[in-house]
Amino acid sequence: MFIVESTIHLATPLARVWRLLIDLEHYADWHPFVSLAGVAAVGNEITYNYRSRLRAIPDVSSTARLVRLDRHAAISWKLGIKRLLEVEEGFYLAKSDAGTVLTHRMCLSGVLSMLPIGRMRRGIEKSTSVTNQSLARYLQRGTTIARYSMPHKRSH
Image (cartoon, rainbow, N blue to C red; front, side):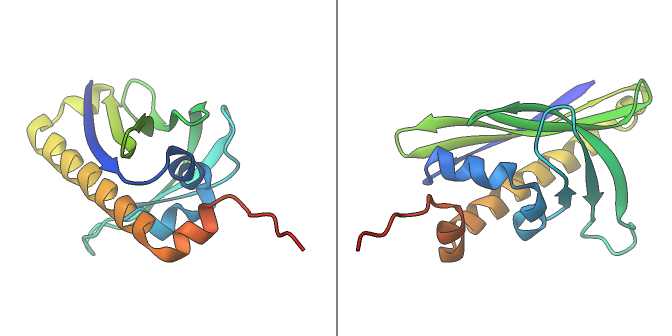
């Protein structure tokens, strides 16, 4: 088993980042590798699609289970085959003075997680970092502010 984490500091309020992370239907808008579909509730099965940046590697679709959903703190899902290869991927949030600290974590377990561990670890470290940077760019876009900000009441 091994765990890879990548942390980024976002100049975005924690609640806005949280709303983006639990909106499973829009992961493909900002996540460079993963799209999800389903309802964000612990224990729910969700559809997981992985797309590689390498054309030679086909997209992979699977069912994942949402295993953690702690309001404004963490979301994670798990997929794979027990004892052979299981992957738990998630995002962990903490409030900071400047906005939000986001940690993207992937935990691999099972027999296959031990195979060429150095190469696999480096690839996962790069992908978690790329994902964090992609999320940060997405949050900086103006349309995101409108979509994920709280609705304002109009006074007449």
